Each structure stands twice: as C-alpha cells, then as structure tokens.
Amino acid sequence: MAVAGKPAQRALAYIRIARPDHWFKNVFMLPGVLLAVYGDSQIVSVELALRLLIAIVAVCLIASSYYVLNEVLDAKFDALHPTKKYRPVPSGLIHIPTAYALWLALAVVGLGLSFALGYPFFVCALALWVFSLIYNIPPIRAKDRMVLDVLVESVNNPLRLALGWYAVGSTALIPASLVSAFWMLGAFFMTVKRFAEYRLIGDPEKAAAYRASFRGYTEERLLVASTFYAVAFGLCLGIFLIRYRLELLIVVPLIAGVIAWYIHLGMQDDSPTQYPERLYQERGLMLYLSVCVLIAIAA
Image 1 (spheres, one colour):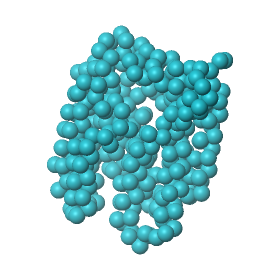
Image 2 (cartoon, helix red, strand yellow):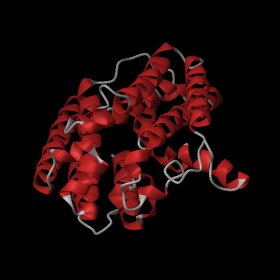
Image 3 (cartoon, one colour):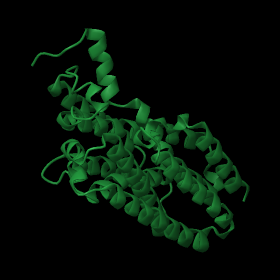
C-alpha cells in the first residue's frame, strides 16, 4: 500500500500516533505516589527516585502502545470527524503493518520495564494494556457501546493511581473507596468529553457515524450521566476521607469547584475538554488545581 508524504513527514507521523503529548494524563499516578509516601516517609531515597523514573517511562510506553492501536483501528471513523480526519492514519501517512509492529514493540518494552518493578506494578501495567484491547478490538470493542465506552476507558484512572502506589514499592492494597472515587472521576471527565464532542459535531446522524456509542446518547443523557458520576465520585471520596484522612475534608468544597469548572469548560464551543492532554494550557484551571494541592498538603 502506498504511503503519502515525505520521509521526514512520515517519520514524524509515527511519533504523532504514539501521542507523547498525551503522557500528561499519567499525572494520575502522582496521587498514588504521594499517598504511599505519606503513609511511610522513610521510603524516600535515591532508589525511590530511580524506581519512579522507570515507572513513568514504562507507563508512558504502554499508554503509547494503546494510542497507536487506537489510531489504527479508529482511522475510518476519524475520517468522519471535523478535526480528527487530519490525523496521520486517515491522512495516509502511516504504513499499517509498521504501525502494528510499533504497537507491539512499545507494549513489550513497557511491560518488560514494569516487570522489573515487582509483581503488583506489573499486574497493574498489564491490566492497563489489556483494557486497551477490550476498549478497541472487536467483538467487544467497548468504545462502540453506550455507557460501557465511558466505564471501560475510565478504568485507566484507578489503574494509574495503583501504578503510582506500587511504583514506590508498596505491597499494601489501595482502599477500595479511593479506587472507586478515581474510577468515577474518570467517568465524569470522559462523559463531559463525549458531551463536548457531540455538541461540536452538531448532527446526531454524523455523530453516530463517527462514534457508534453516540447512537444511544443525547446531550441530556450525557449531562445526566456526568452528574451521576460526579456525585458517585464525591460519595466514594467522602468515604475514603472519613475513614483514612479526615483532616482532608477541608478540600472537598475545593474539589467541587474543580467539577463545576470542568462542566463550564465542557459547555464551551469546541470545548478544550475534548483534548484532555491540552488542559494544562487552561491557566486558570491549572492555577486553581495548584492551590487545591497546596491546601491539601498543608492540611
């Protein structure tokens, strides 16, 4: 199959489908690291810094493996999207067999590094990769199924939390309430993203052609679902804080502010919530989040 573009352009395209700009999402590992260190401050050392570096590289490679698969399998649907049609695969810049080889190579290296960090970390890393298969590959292809598309994709959030937790060498189980909270928070973010995409396309038939799960969605259903996930997140987080970190209850109203701000962003035309990897460019939100983190540390 002929591949379009100049050699340098094609080489850059392979980097683009690995989406290194999406590595920002691995920030969800940070709470796991902080909580594990908070529980045992004596583990802070040079060795810990090396473990964390290896963990970050491993998770980034596994995530890129997922992104490559996503780009290849979604190409025919991306061609129907107003902006995603310019991605490398629908643009004809990618040799598909080479892309599949890249997908496997990234997974092998990422999982190999994960194995060096211990069994708990490896299991979580493997789960992160396996869920990418469930999300993208038929016959399940969860991303084509209403509700399931959000819930399966959102599993990445608690998995990243667990990866941060186990990256420091902890062998204790993470509280189920915290895992559930991160899952529901991820579902909230993903549903607002779906809402923004649906509004941008502006045509139910075109939306359904682009993303099969949109056949069952409406703006109202997506707003109702995002409200449910936000409330579920708050309840799970409250359970965790009351049982384990009562002093952090002070940050709950601040977290509610984050939820409200995110909904506000989701309502904007061509909303930035469609591109979570670019949210760091929302200076107001980033400043507010920094204040929340500082207050939580001080508490």
